[in-house]
Amino acid sequence: MSQTTAGKASGQPSGRDAESPRGLFGRLFLFLRQVVGELKKVVTPTRRELVNYVLVVLVFVAFMMVLISVLDLAFGQAALWIFGQGSDAAGG
Image: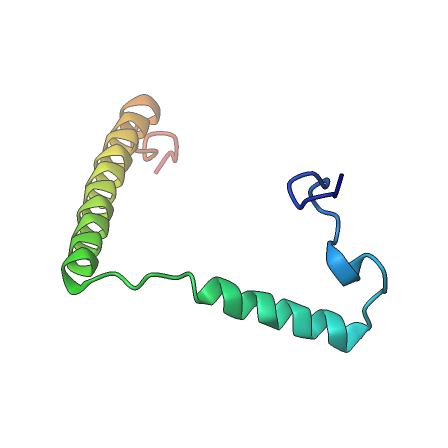
């Protein structure tokens, strides 16, 4: 019975990596090769998808700006109501 990739524990090197340790340049080359392999999997969005994504982000950011502004004003008014203006305690 042969050992398959699915049968190995995750995180363990496979193939020749398990037999010989790599040097600094070997590890760097392996990393760069894996980066290029991952970048080949990237799918560029179409123009319509990109516009849709940008609009969703802008609407979300605008909503959060309004929400935080309203909360800031509400908490500021509540603090003024609770603690007052502060000029009474100054004794001026």
